[in-house]
Amino acid sequence: MDINVFIENFAGQFDETPADQIKPETNFRDLDEWSSLIALSIIAMVDEEYGVTLKGDDIKNSTTVKDIFDAVVAKK
Amino acid sequence: MDHSVVLVNDERILRPVTVDDAEFIVHLRNLPHVKGNINDTSTDVEKQREWIRKYLERPNEWYWIVESLDHRPLGTTSLYHYNAEKRQIESGRWAMVKDHNLKMIHGRTQLYDWAFSHIDVDHIVCDATSYNKHVLRYHRMLGEREIGVEKGVFIINGKPVDVVWFDQSRAEWPEAKRRIERIFGQ
Image 1 (spheres, rainbow over the protein chains, first blue to last red):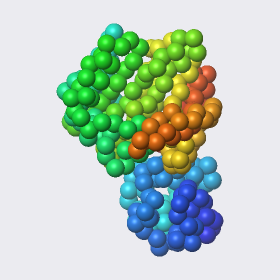
Image 2 (cartoon, each protein chain N blue to C red):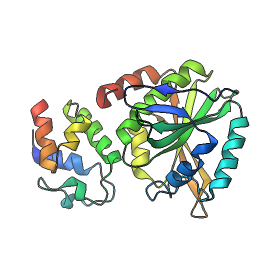
Image 3 (tube, each protein chain N blue to C red):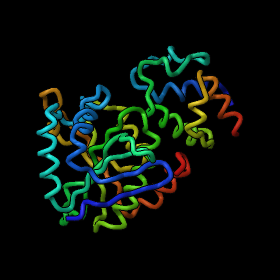
């Protein structure tokens, strides 16, 4: 599973945040646009693109974009 | 009209709005993250009390406070504008005090189950402001069909705003519900 593709898919859930602002080490909660609605979009994206079901706690227990990526990898 | 429907599960309670909820509703609808995405709401609590009194006299309409299990108010939701000819009812007045959107999805599932079981409708429709991309994405993610745009329906900050309409049909609800529960849990 490629993290760069994951970040591209992750960034695709944002409408106003430039993709180049989203990196593996980005603290996603620091992004101005971050909200629980985007968290739901991420969960749906992961289901559709990776066949993995993330729970709310997976997002809650993550700090960076890479943390979420790692959570997805762990469930594959 | 029986407004006394209470929906409970292991995460939250939907209990009927009363006149005593006016202050909370005014507060909720004027929160920064809510205001601007719904029709302008007066900050006059007595006007809200009067609105609720009139609502309680109307048939085929239900307005709930979403509460935690220890009875803290978290938000509101409602079913209204029942249309017997179109066999539809509108879902709306969704607002939460802070980011409880996963609970909102679970609450929506419970609400839609109740509506399709107890109201003679084939469609539950809802609208969202045309500029709220995140909410539009949310409705599409839930599998609702986008059925049109209506111009100038809301007044927000004193200006007319277009809304996008979505439809959840009774026929498609079982599959939609399965998908929602698979992805987001129950």
